[in-house]
Image 1 (spheres, rainbow, N blue to C red):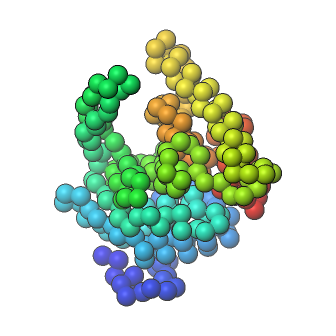
Image 2: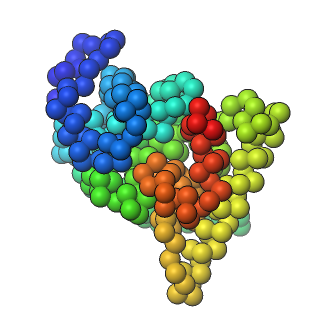
Length: 263
């Protein structure tokens, strides 16, 4: 497994056959401009060099599994200053064959403890590993029309967590969107994102409770603004055209962060 990376610390090269197979399966990666494709391949190789993959249960990490995850995981940081430094708070990536049932324990505002089971396709832990379902990673090859991508979702959470809070606002650079301070940058970001989130949440509630038209994006994004950010990132990277039609104010905002050169 990953024999072509053993012992390499600088300048690793992904075999062309393996890379082309990945692009063939995940067409949204193949559609990137040529220069972006070169950069994606370089970052994916460095990601594979620095991260450690673990198969849960009897699941086996193959070259196909590791490369598919790496290529999609580095897409959000492709143009971010610092690149893979955004992911330097963890090393481990745990891959399950399919979805996982996670036991949850929450305390409400009245100090009542609630326990329940949640079926999850992935999970990102602050300063900890990322968990992914291989079944859902594979599904990302055919769900671009729905704006769904579990890898991008979980790694968007990793970006959001960099400042210690999962609140839909990753750490923003100085002068973001022409602002004069960090507080102003955050306020500008959340003003746009909050409005989009509230509209999405209202549409989700109308569909769930009153039989209204369901939203295009995964309704899980209505759980919180942090989840909405992650769900929106999925669509932004895999189906920008539909994303822009559904949320016209968000592509420009995300470009300011993810593509400062374009913005």
